[in-house]
Length: 181
Image (cartoon, rainbow, N blue to C red; front, side, top):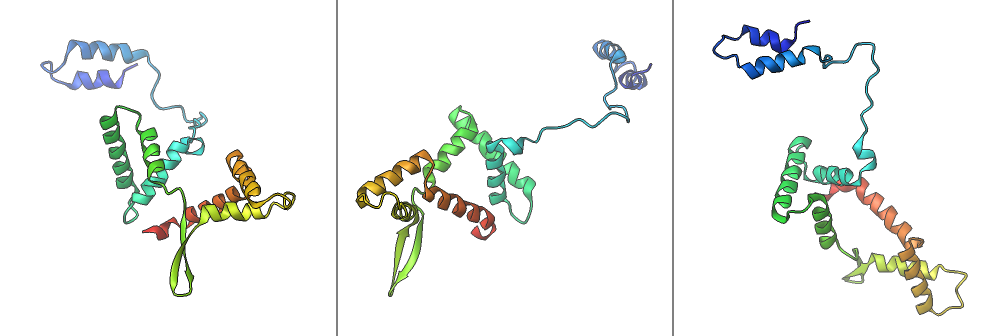
């Protein structure tokens, strides 16, 4: 058998041939070929985007940064940002990015509503909690403050109607994200 490296080395002039390259070519003579045989089944490559929320977040951010439908430059911008943040903080870049996003994310979403001639800003998250506490039919005998406290506790437990409103609003926001710019 004749390896491709050995055949390449044999065509080089003797002044370029190095003894370590010849030794490396001779050691590769018994290795299997790099390409699989034609009758072999294709290897299954796991899709990291299916299970990795970090990859999903980075893909989402890349699509927000994307201009003129060019995704590759957007990913290069994201990679550059991650590299710079890792150099600046000496920490893994994705948790640093998540912390930054949590820091600047609003705790309360405000919606402008017209009342007469004025625009009044209504906090939606709080409105959802209040509406869900008013829907508690079994606890109608409790005063409003108690129902509100129960609703806040159910929000923290992840079992509130307000969380359902939040997730549906979030899904609508993801669907309508092209309209953000």
